[in-house]
Image (cartoon, rainbow, N blue to C red; front, side, top):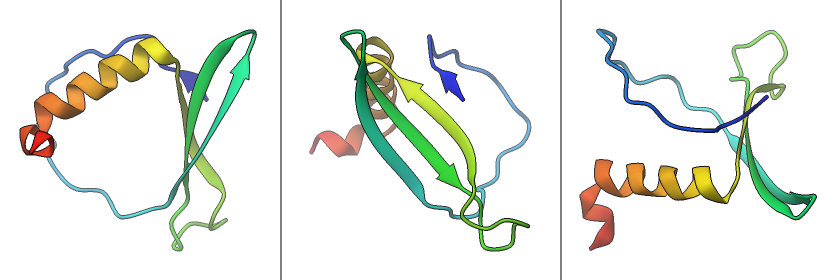
Length: 79
């Protein structure tokens, strides 16, 4: 599990779409800090289907930064 502190642009030679999975989410507050947690679950082909594969957490600051990345990456969402 990881609490995202900052986002950084990186380059990669690999450009492919991964297989679809379900992403669960929940919100909670710890010591007055609101957290959004996103959990992706293993695909049906995995040894243990529906087991949490990755978890990431965002606080208000990282959520704001992600929202900007999303609107910059998908400008048509504003319309």
